[in-house]
Structures are given as C-alpha cells and as structure tokens.
Length: 310
Image (cartoon, rainbow, N blue to C red; front, side, top):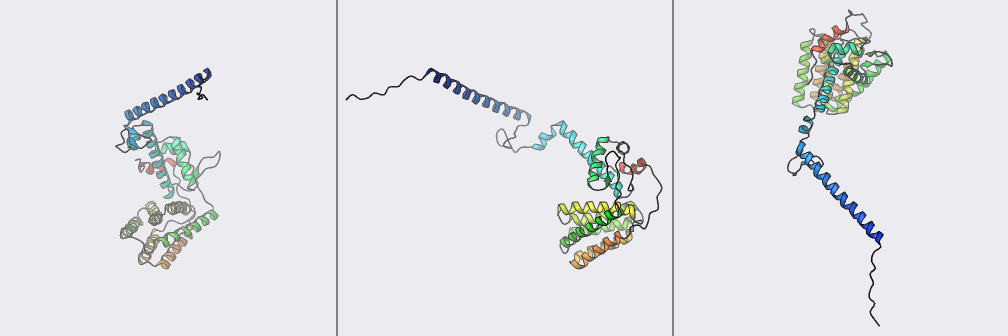
C-alpha cells in the first residue's frame, strides 16, 4: 500500500488579499502608535521634561513638578489672581457686615459695591453669591441684593442651633487644651480687653472670633464651618435686634469659660457657655434707635483700605 502523501493546496487568492490587508492594517496601526508615542514623548520632554502619565520624567528619574508646569501657564496665573481678588473682597465685605458697618437691609447694588472696592461687577456677583450661602446677604429674583434681615423666629432658631454646636465644642475641648492653645486663648481675651470701650467694631468681631477660635481647636472642619456660619449670623441678628454690644460682659464670660476648660470641669464649662449664649440672645429688641445714615461708598471706604489680596 502506497503511503498517502498529504496534498497542500494553494490558498485561495482572496485569502492572500485578506491577509495582506489585515497585516497591513496591523503594521500601520503599530507604526502610527509608535510614531504618536514618540511624538508625545518629545513634546512632553520639550515642554517640561516630565512624563505626565507615570509622574516621572522621560528617563524615570525625577518626580513631576506640577507647580512648575502650572506656573508656565499664563491663564492659570490669571485664574489664581482672579480667585485671590474674589477672596479678598469677600473677606472685606463679610467683615463690614459682621462688624455692623452695613446694617441689615442695606442695599448692595453690584455696580456701587464694585466701585467701592475698585473691582468688576463679575467679582461682586461671585462675592454676593458666597455671602448669600452663609445667610449674610439676601438675594431675590429681579431685586438687588441686600444685607440679610432675619426675622425674630429665624433669629431664635439660629441661637438654638448655636447652643447645640458650642456645647459640642466644649465637650470636645474640656481637659484637652494644649499649653499653646491655652496661651492663644488668653492672648485673644487680652485683645478683647484692649478693645473694650475703645473700638466697638473690633470688639464685636473679636467676640465672635473667640467662638470660632475655640471651634478651630477641635480640628473638626465641619464643626468649625458651622460655628463660623452661625456666629456670623448672630452678629447680624444682634445688629438688627440688640442694644449696643457689651464687651465687658463678654470678656468676663470668655475668661470664665477658658478657666473651666483648663480645670477639666466639663459641667461648669458647658453651663458657662450656655449661659453666655443665652445672655447674648436676650439682648434682643432693646435698641431700635436709627443711627445716622451714611452712604454705601462711605461705609465701605475703610474696608477697601483693609482689603488684602495675596
């Protein structure tokens, strides 16, 4: 029996065409990818000498310097300056409200406020939006923004929330203050005493700052933000409903709270803080005499001088 010799038939002509097309496409894709990677590497090397994808340079020896890359972009610098400008005006206008230079109900037209600070309406629009979120400014559709005027019911609600928040601050800090924190609190009270009877606006601000300073020592960012917001709203409420701020009373109460915290007496510290906030709240409706009217530009002149932009 003869051995069967396998017969290999020539491939169909269509197969050769198909094979050539497939391998041509694969080869082409390979070279396109290679060329693209090479070109991308050269561009990255020329621009910064860094390889963005793997966070090292082309040779894999140096960490990426994103700050240097950012600094080379003029548009990023412009955005940074614009952000600093908005932050600076925000802080200045917020301070004017907290220190009660701007009374509740004061109209805040974008063009007039922008002229007062020497900035555009776009900047003022961003600032007013932030202050609205904090409850310090009221904005209604088709109406000019104005300094918020909380109702009595809203005022009571704010103080109720504040009492709960500050109780949490006290419970967190009692017996836990470091020597450095204790010195910082005592220095703050000393500054309050110095402002007593000399600078009413600074006294009001320092009184509120005492509470935000305490909150910051808890290292709880959410608690700090909430305390700062309600403290700001309380300053606004006192401007609307209270008699002139009694800084002497506040300084004595603040010092007593610090002493209780340092002793580790939680019950006394909680009681002192609660009584302090109740005393502040009960100052309401004792002084409704209108003060001398001053123009918006005149009111904001001092705050423009205090405007700081990094």
